Image (cartoon, rainbow, N blue to C red; front, side, top):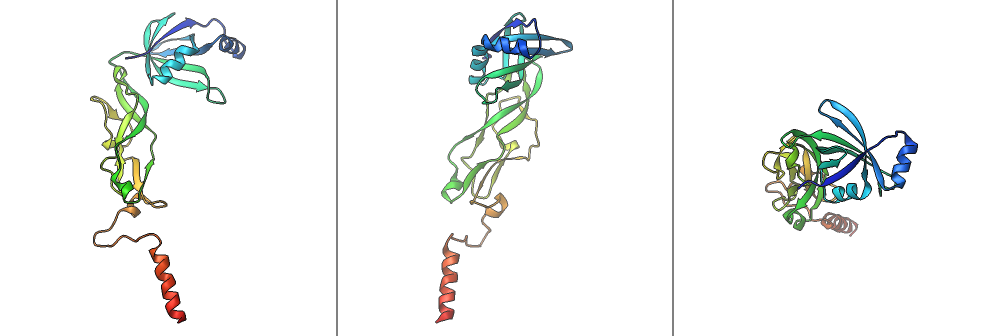
Length: 212
């Protein structure tokens, strides 16, 4: 369910007017898209922050304008604490849009039990989906991720109708030995994996034998 954000018309422009609005708990905004004119707006900071907390990418604007809108860009202050400007893009519920969606890991990785480390390489993925079905995040299921293997964009769990907007073979998650690449960590058939610390011990024994 989309969040509802009430907006007001913004009469003035410029940094002074923006500071005045922010001091009043408002976030300067702009609405554009669909070939219609741009409208300068403002929204209550609490409503914007609530939509962010809920992970809403598409919101229903009410008040001065009534339309569904994609949160196209959200700017934060220097400390990343307060929103200072927001760009809204007009959309319709059935319209196909491209958005960036965070990637979350799911499951227990068997490769970790073999000494591997799970690396989330791609933190966000581009998706093509309808405006009314923008997911809060997508899952990368690591329950079958073995040591030396990787999860690609095409392996992600996507909602029905959503398609990856990026290269389907782009790597999202890897499970590798510390300091190794995925292909280097994959155990070779018939080759005994090296035990960390054993090689150094064997070299020490060889040196001791030569000195005897």
